[in-house]
Image (cartoon, rainbow, N blue to C red):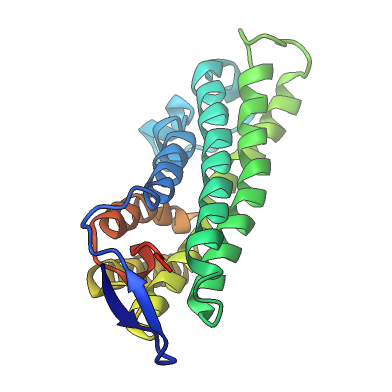
Length: 235
């Protein structure tokens, strides 16, 4: 055991061991979000062949319900992982460093994303339930299914925005507050800035989805780092 001091000059007992598992909840949430958002994303064949293709009700019968069903489930598991991460973060970071603005931003970002993603993945799961060949096939006509498709089109991508903001909180904790090692802090900051810069440059609102792989990488890096927030409080 060794002693460190926080920015207020208070001695803080720390554990100098190299690996701490709890930040991997962050990585798990990001990976499950990638399953729900990226790996199970499905587009009509016409849209895949040509960017000029206009998606319409006529494209609905060709969509496979299974990727939407898997994506909806993976997304719900992502929400669960985010809420567990938020709870662990509160216990291990926010309560210990209650003066940290960045720590609060991470907490609020994770919870806000969980709420938004619940709706987004719910709409995705609904397609897996109502599309042709699914369990409740015929509950809606193709026009109704098309409405669900449009709602699902960008919603999981847009709902990742609070995660990009949470990564900005991690960056602030490292570059301003001294609670996170420089490596993961810089990576988190780059992902956050890139998300907003990409939206500003292209006008595409779904580009904050890059926060999902960002969460995976930052969580792994934090678990292996000597950041003060991953040091066990032994007092």
